[in-house]
Structures are given as structure tokens and as C-alpha cells.
Length: 223
Ligand code: HEM
Image 1 (cartoon, rainbow, N blue to C red):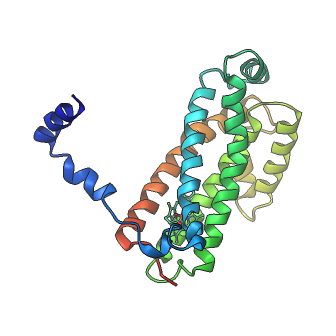
Image 2: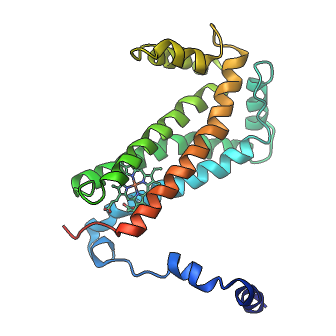
């Protein structure tokens, strides 16, 4: 049955070369932990990606209950956490995943650094990686405000002060993020929009570039 569906689509769209190009590759010996145990460090990028996918999926479900306005935000999170079936699990995944993905990304960066994989010809992928790094940090910072509790409010006060301390553009950056003079209604809607649309959009584009370059250049090594 499945084979028939596959053949039907393949006959019309010739999809076999497409997935073979993506999936049909031998894992090189030096990055395979089954051959060299220490090669497990080469899994860190893939694990970072795995948690990133979990963040996107759990985040999509969170937005089914989250209300991005200052009257309802806190209560909507509380409701999700305490009343909605599996709400505590979905929120827990997004909450702990947010920290874990930063840790994994950092370990991946250390692997790339200590294997010297940022050197020619992979400099541009390192640059893309640095951009990804900042996007991921920004995702953490903007997500932190959304529960709209005391911790969120005062952490955001600190974040806005940091933005303001940037030379030349500091005042503009703060106004752009806060949407006004105080941390209020427009700050929350802006952080929400940045957290769920702008940054994930940027991240997906950067990850596409990251993976394209990895495929184009092959994995580095052996040492
Ligand atoms: C969401 C964050 C990221 C994801 C999902 C990701 C994913 C990956 C994956 C799957 C690989 C293949 C090799 C491996 O798994 O180790 C890789 C390679 C690479 N990554 Fe990342 N990465 C991320 C962030 C970064 C950062 C922050 C940097 C550096 C600042 C970076 C620089 C590189 C470079 C230079 C390579 C090529 C390494 C080689 O050929 O040995 N990546 N990345």
C-alpha cells in the first residue's frame, strides 16, 4: 500500500533522487562513535538541532493557550500549567529545553573550536554559527518575559538596560524593543512577536544556510 503511494508520487514527481541526495550518505569513519568513542562530540550539532525542533513544536502548542496581553498573559500560563491536559508537560519541555539547547549549542561550539573546524574553508559557516548563537540567546531573553510575572518583569528591566548601554544605537534599540518608556503592554506584544515570528524565521533561514554549507563542504577531519 505505502509502496504503491510512493510509486504513484515518484512516477509523477521523480522524488527518489531528492531524498537520496539528502539521506543516502555514509557516516565518515572519524565521526562515528561506534568506531571511536570520542567521536560522540560530533553528535552535539545534531542534538542541538533535535532540541531546537522540540522547542518549535512545544512552542507551537503553547501558543494555543497563551494570551499575549498584560491582563491575561499570567493567568493563561497558570491555566495551561495547572488545568490543561498535558499542559505542564508541554510547558516543562519548552522551559527546560530552552536552557538545554543553549548548553548543547555551547558544547557544539566548543567541539567546532577545539577540532579547528572553523578554519578554511569553513570560516563562513562559523560566521553563520555566531549569528545563530545570538538568535538563540535572543530567543531565550524574549521568551523569558512572556509569563509576565515578577521574575520576567525585572529580568526584562535588566535586558533593556543592557540594550540601552550599546554605544550610539542604545537608546534606539531600547525604544524599539520596549515600544515605549515603561515595560508595559507594547513591550509584551513586541517580545511576543519577536519570540514567535521574527527570531524563529531568522533561525530557520540561518540553519538552512548552516546545513547547506555542511553538505557542500563535508564534515571536517579526521584530526
Ligand atoms: C541551533 C544551533 C546549531 C545547530 C542546530 C547546529 C548544527 C550543526 C550540525 C548538525 C553540524 C554537523 C556536525 C556536528 O553535528 O557537529 C554542524 C557543524 C558546524 N557548526 Fe553548527 N549548529 C549550531 C550552532 C553553531 C554555532 C553557534 C557555531 C559556531 C559559532 C557553529 C559552527 C559550525 C561549524 C563551523 C560546523 C562545521 C564543522 C565541521 O565541519 O567539522 N554551529 N552544526
